[in-house]
Length: 427
Image (cartoon, rainbow, N blue to C red; front, top):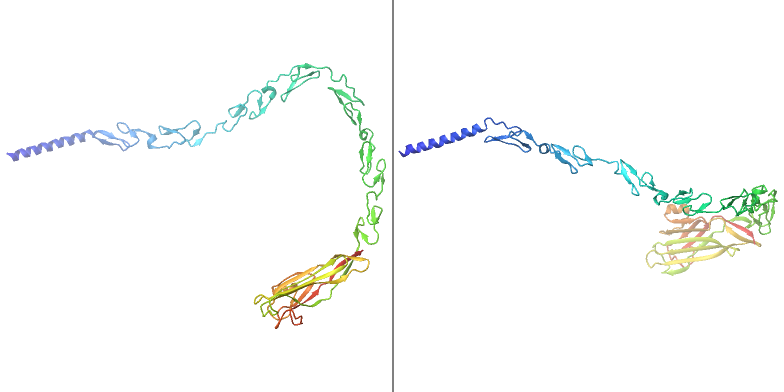
């Protein structure tokens, strides 16, 4: 009996489920959901952006998402832009006619053009007419100009309100002058309050010649000219000859011993000679160390210079220095000044025309005689400057003692000169 009841209960449950399923199936049977909608228990579940019983109503602001910029809002899938922007996404700014117009002095922009207040003008209302802005009123037919009244004859005052007498009643213009508004208008050649001053250069011109200029009715002549009209020429006027020279036809004739356009320059004679060579110049002044370089260099300097002393002597300065680079630093040097030439009687040295100085510097690394010149220094990697000396011949290091013995085989210097040119003038 229990088995029969159990089977009846199961049949009842199954029947009920079948009825429910049949009912659900029947609820969506005739329902058509569009735009990918899904029927659930007879009702359409719509995707995002769609609504309505059958999902037929589309919200394009969601489905098309136009991304409105600059404060724009989406309406029916289209951007509604603020007044100063346009375009599908409101990205383009609308340039208004007055955006770039800066009206001054209270002016206002209308359709890109400034409308100015009374008394102002110009493209930006930048020009002010004070006659209007300050409300200036000129009486008696006066005219306002730049904020001031210009009064007609017979009136004066800020507003031309005061009547005056004829300004020319008591003005007596001379020399043909004419009174206008109380002032004399003078004819050409006359000036002054009453035209009393005469410029004779205009009224009685002297017609100056040769570049002369009229001053106070008379000709002011350039240098070399004279006469009422500068008609006479003297080439020596204004020419100054010095040292006893005299002017002839506008040029200085100079005395013996002088030259130049004004005889101010001493006339010189040019002389050239080649000094005898300096032979065996020893660095006899011991500075330090013993007398032997011992193959340690030496480093060598040599100089020669000529100069004029007291205008009467042509002097030669010679210098020789040798210094050991290692060991006890033995060093010797000598500097000496001698006279090459004296000026002859009645003459003095004026200047040295040729070069006055030469020098060389090098490192001696053998016992041989070294010949140093501008060309030789390039080859031997030493320094040589100046053109007074043709060459220096130097023994720096020897096989024995090098300093202070003054022997031919000690360190010594020979100097051979290039020709020297100098000028003499009268004493």
